[in-house]
Image 1: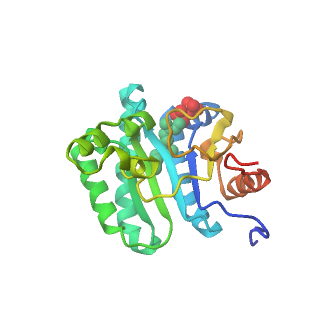
Image 2: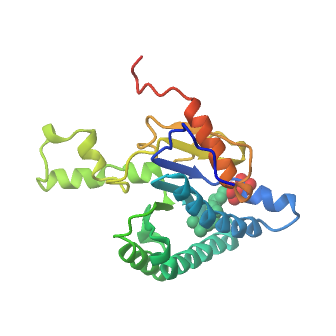
Length: 237
Ligand code: FPP
């Protein structure tokens, strides 16, 4: 059945905090990693659905700078899932016509994963379908840390008079990517957890109860419907 999107404004950029994998697995008396695996499958489907609905940019929070404190076996599973994802994506990149970028501090990832990411980013850079950003070892505060900006100022790249929010954005991982209009966090939790702190200044937030492994196209449409009910005034009246 065709999706009924008549009259709906489709947000250009949707960002998702994929929460609830652990609880989803627990409900099934399964280990947490089972939930992450299912969550990974949902990511692939949601990319197709998002593009299908006319979303141009999709960003997902896959691993935060704080997630290293999880048990080592969970960290390993998440990293393996990401490795697997990068490889599958590389194989399917032409068919998907999807540009993939990873935001976050990649330098702390294993060398082989860094290489897979670099290869996929390079191979997909001219694809014109969905722009898909994976936030990996990402933290908003880490991204905003002004060292890069200060270094460039010191090197004479710009004068203090030239430094404004637009110039500052050039130094973020999301350079060239529009700010998300809609942020979804699944599982009913209402927190930002260090995700895209700068970029969400004017975003709308939506917190469905559904756990990430159960998220699907129907839920995405519901989120877009909610987004359409909001009146965005950007500080005006
Ligand atoms: C939060 O659920 C989820 C994560 C920290 C990991 C998200 C990763 C994936 C969905 C899989 C890999 C991603 C890609 C792009 C292939 P939680 O573990 O905090 O759940 P809980 O709050 O119920 O414990």
